[in-house]
Length: 251
Image (cartoon, rainbow, N blue to C red; front, top):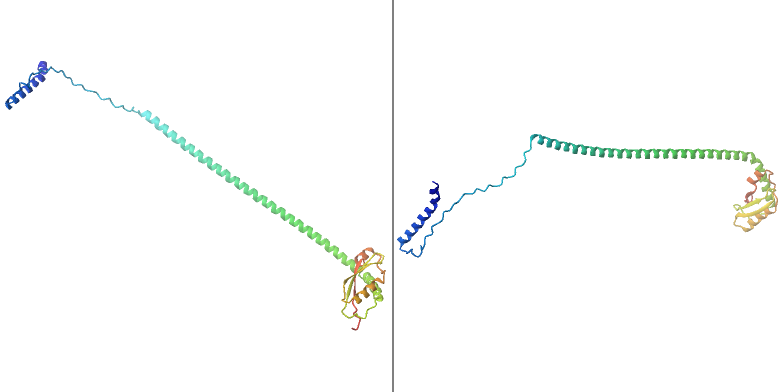
């Protein structure tokens, strides 16, 4: 059986060659030159070789306990991330609340400072009003006392003023140009013993003769009768005005 398999292929080749020769003979060709020699084929010992393909690398099979551990690890990592985020959010909220509380404290402190300032200003105004009222009351009392003193001194002052007026009137020689409506005002200064210190015209009559005659009437007196009370003298006779008005003239 093995010998038949070994010679089957050469036998088949010989048959093919003989068939070709017969074909050319039938066709009328000479095959003497073409087929000069017949090469007897050697026996070919062939064997079918099967090349094995490399097996694909299989992924390691994860066992169920290992998958559970991996899942638990992922869950723990997720929980840790969530906890960290919550802690971060809580810290931000606490920081915002602290900042808000600080702002409220500053606002309360500013409001309290403003209230204290307003209260201080009110106290100062009240104190100023109290001082003003007290000062006003003191001035009022002083003015009232002065008025009372003036009222008490009025008769005595009037008596000395009348005496001064009479002395000047007696010394005045009215000029012919004097007319009703004319008037001349003089500022008279005395020293405490009543002597004349100075005479100054402060309002003229429009007539130089009238003004000169009035001034001459004051200067001729030289010394006036004044009160011995220095306060009374200083208040009424140190400096006073003397007014000339010839109202008793007919024209």
